[in-house]
Image 1 (cartoon, one colour):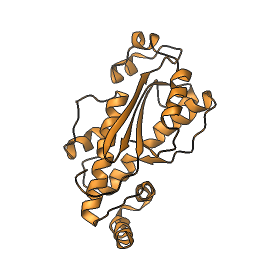
Image 2 (cartoon, rainbow, N blue to C red):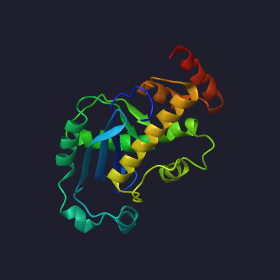
Image 3 (cartoon, one colour):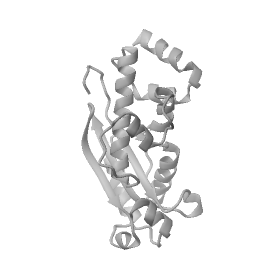
Image 4 (spheres, rainbow, N blue to C red):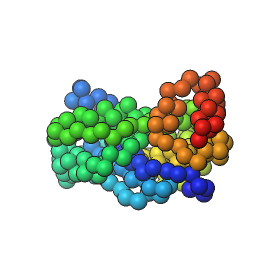
Length: 211
């Protein structure tokens, strides 16, 4: 970051999945995550995972992940047990459209008897408040809108996690500059996502007055 904003560590994660609902039998097929400390990505976690069944051709084409790739991958339980270690310090978690990723995280963790108490934030909901004038709030649109660095790959878990991390950092920087904030706790971003659009500025001005 290019200023004196204090940043707590956080972890951004993204799943690629066989479908939209674990309650319908869908499973994660890839996870990617990055840990961010003081505005820099300091570690990464990425793995394909074999869900134990074939995925359909739509998912293969959408993600670029083939059944041949998944046959060679470790099973979900092994990967998720390792991921539990990656987030074990309780750092806040961020995902774009977090309700989707949180659903799969809780399901996959339940399969290996893992619980966690990491708070969860949504970069999409936060971006709706920070960038209300953006054309839409899809990850790819926001990456273009803010000219964020990208390798041009979408719908692979690690690439999407990295882009989401850069988006989250950009939002923190823009809020810091606009409102003169030196400290933006994770809870503020969670609260911001729940504020009504017309009340966003007043909410942030109130916080800035006490920062």
